Image (cartoon, one colour):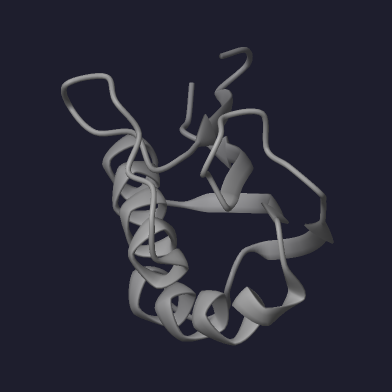
Length: 98
């Protein structure tokens, strides 16, 4: 955090430190719930997905977690996230005040 800005990353991480793997829609929801616990007002998000097939689920779930106007968002399709079985990673820049 610096100058009222926070940069963070959200993944489908459970409270016990293990990762929620399996169905993509559930992972996306879990990652967004985790993100919303950290920041209330994201300015910009960069979403990494392991398949373009997950974009429609992301869009649907995103709309439930953020109000319009939505944060500026980019989506990258990658071959892997770095944790076996994980399909989403979200990097966020938020302004949290001074």
